Image (cartoon, rainbow, N blue to C red; front, side, top):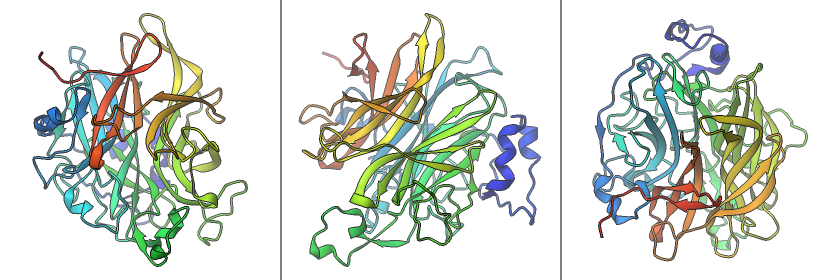
Length: 449
C-alpha cells in the first residue's frame, strides 16, 4: 500500500516511468507497495471465457459471467463496466484498442449470506478491437488473492476497508488525452469496498420487520479508495487518510476520527465513485458517489472535489430522489460527462455537463437509467427517463443501470450498461444514441435468419 501523502504529487510531475520509479520506500513515509510488480509491464493471457454463454442472453450482450468456470471471480455476476478507447502513441500503425474494467462475484463469495447481495466482489479486465466482442484477461495481476483479477480482496491489511468485497468506480488516465495512451502514463482506479465490520441490518431498511431487529450484515458500511498502475493490469493501493486506508468514508459527525463538516448530511455508506478531471491550467477532480443518507434512508448522489485526486473535500448531495416519479426510490450509480460537440472530424468539449444515473422506482422497485444536466458540474436539473428496462422475458427486464458513455470517431455515442434479468442474472450490454436522440439497444452478436 502506498501512502497517499507521499504519492499526491505524482500528477504534478512528468508522466514518464522514470518519474514513477523515483519513488522509493522509506520508513518515514510509510510506503508499502502491495503489488511489487506494479512497475513491470507485461502482456496478459487472453481467453474469451464468456463467449460460450453469450447466446443465452441477447444480441446486445457484450460480456457475461464466466458460467463455465465456477472458480472464476465472475462466475455468478458481473457489473459496473468502465471502458477506455485509445491508440498507443508509440505505435502509429496500431489498431484502436478498447479496454474494459468491471467487477464480478463468484459463487463462493456469494455463498456468504452475511454480505450484501450485490454484483461486487473483485475487479477484472477485458480487451476488444471494436468494443463489441471482448476477451477476458484470465491471468490478471499475479499479486492478487486469486487468478484472473485486476484488483482482488485486500488480504494484506486485515484492518482495510476492502477485505470482504470490492467494486469498480472509475478508471482514469489523467496524464494523457482521452484518445491517446502515452508511454509511461499513470492510471488511477477509484473503487469501493466493504470489510468484516458488522452493522445492524435495520440501519439500511426504511421499514424493517421485527424479525430483523437483531440481524447483522457485514461489508455494508462501504468506503472509497484509490489504486495506481502504469499498465492498467497491475495495481497498487494508495493508503488514504482514514485508518482503514480509504480516501472517502461515510460521514458520521459522532465519529471522533472525522472532522465536523458543516452542511454535510450523515451517510451510511459511500460507493460507486465517478470521477471527472479537468485538465485546465489548474487540474481539478470532481467525484460523484452513491450514498445512503441516515435521515430517511434516502439513496442519493453526493459530490466531493480534490486538487490531486487523493485527498477529497465533500460538498454535499447534488442529486436526490423526487417525492414521486421514476426515481422516488433513490438515485445511484452515475456517469458524468463534460458535454461536447462533433464538428465532423473532432469532438470539442463544452463547459456544461450531463449525468446519466440509475433511478429506482417505488412502484416496481426496478432500476432505470435517467438523465440530468448541469452548467457547472455542481447543480443538476433532472431531464427524466432515457433508457428503460427490457421487455418482459428479455435478459435486462428486471433492471438497467451503471451507465458508462464513450464517444466514437464518427460522432456517435455508445453506452455500456449493466442489465439484470429474472432470478438476478446480470450481464453487460450496449446501446447507441440514435439520430432522434434516443438510446436504442445495439446489436453485438451475429445472428442468422
